[in-house]
Image (cartoon, rainbow, N blue to C red; front, side, top):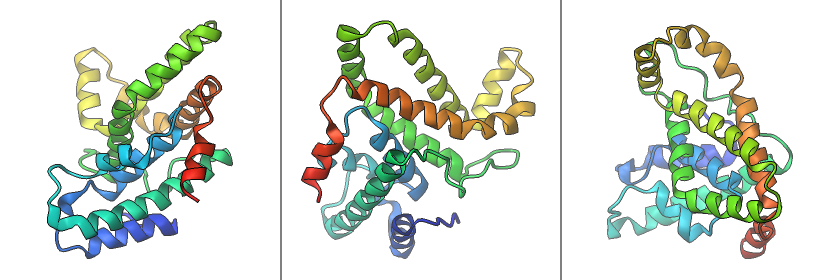
Length: 217
């Protein structure tokens, strides 16, 4: 079991642990990764858009109370994550260490899968931001897109380490596992690049953070 230090994360984790059937939504770590990507998006989607991503379809209509409670706690986690990013804190949670070999199902993988899941849902928003930037400032776009590609490749590696190692070996790369711990140490920096890349794009879109705050006092 992963023990989280932030009260909002503790509350969500504890609530799901108390549920007799907690499988109507994603694992807590996956939800937190999803929330990170939502908070980092160039344009933050409305709760009605992103909250359904954390539930496993089809959602039983008899689970309305549980869905509402998880949604409430997830919103608190989003507000906490937004504040962390606003304060320049994009470190990886201490509760997500690099797992030991053979790197089977683990909290870090779940978190990364949540981030990638939300990023895939947010692709249209990212593309909209790229187009907006291209109309006003094209010189940085290639470099920023290269940075984003690097970020997503690293996130994919830690979302499924066994698969990443298998792919590396098939391409003749036998050093990935040896260097895995060193690469993991650079993960907070890569998360920072991901957030900063989005921040560059935000300048070319309406200020969605203020809109979010005005709708969620």
